[in-house]
Length: 336
Image (cartoon, rainbow, N blue to C red; front, top):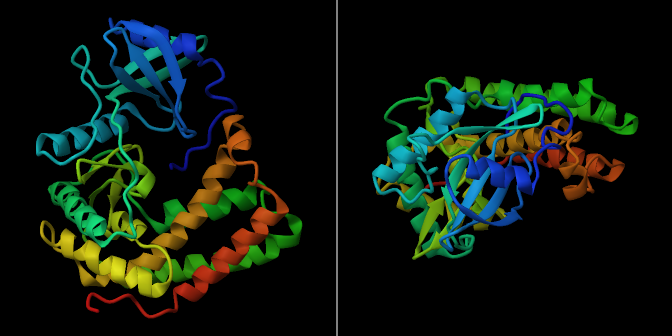
């Protein structure tokens, strides 16, 4: 999720016929079957091919990423695939992975991927967590070899400060909650700044960036990582903390399994334990602002009808209060 605001209805000129025309323009033969998949930031479709196979085509949100940033995403996924890390890189067609098509006055950039079936990993299964740790470790081993040149770097400014400022500047917070939100979010930003100031030499590596279970397909007893759309430079914990959920004792047990597998391939920095709750806080703030930024896109009110209500913002303020308390809790440990 990026910080760039969008024009209204960027996908209004994109429909099934335009999807088929885009693929036909590459010299590929479809069977004219198009099925829209659940995707909001981009538009993603499953398309049937004449030979009976299926492709997944992703149309990137206009103006969000530069060509260089998208190509870096593609190159990272391919670099991982070339080293037998289970990821789903885009297909190279006509010597390219990034393609363009014109739909009315709007130009779209798109990429095609093989369709891969699978299920979400079972994060309450210790064996699954151990394997997830191993494969995230493999991703990070490759990601540590160099930094991205064009993609974003995770920071308090990008994920917390900019999110807070957008919501306040565009009056998304109801008047009855504005003072509470403004004060609380300001205190959280101060706390987050101190956390990262106290960690001046954190290793910064290339990350998946959005490594939640919905972006992992479990098949053949191993995870396949999909959707590198949010790949960025940041601390390793950004890809690890999303494996942790539930009560503190549950998260403690999950952490031990994930780190045990992770360290088979890449060294875990114990001081990154201090980043778990700060990164969770930043994601909560960023998620609300992401929905707000996209609210002019008709797909968002249809898919997130609970957003931007008095109840939603009241619960969001409560979540942030809980995160303020969580920032004061003792850190999870690397031993039972």
